[in-house]
Image (cartoon, rainbow, N blue to C red):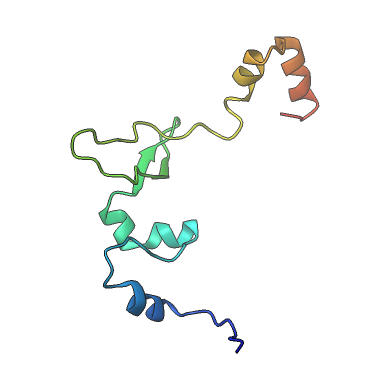
Length: 106
């Protein structure tokens, strides 16, 4: 006998998994996560100030430890901000890095 696959609804998964002592949930997009009250309650969505003072949304520390709690201390670097220093660490000269910038490679 062959069975066909059918996707379960979230309500069906809740009925099947809800009483088990496991952590489960559906995968959310970043936008959905930002709007989820549970994520805000668990301090998973933080507002941090960027380098120029603008507010940025950041993801908090997912694992909550009582003896050694983690924290987010600063906003993430801007896109590409670390590229020149990483290229220097890899052995590229200042001139080569400037050339990459002129060519719009970085």
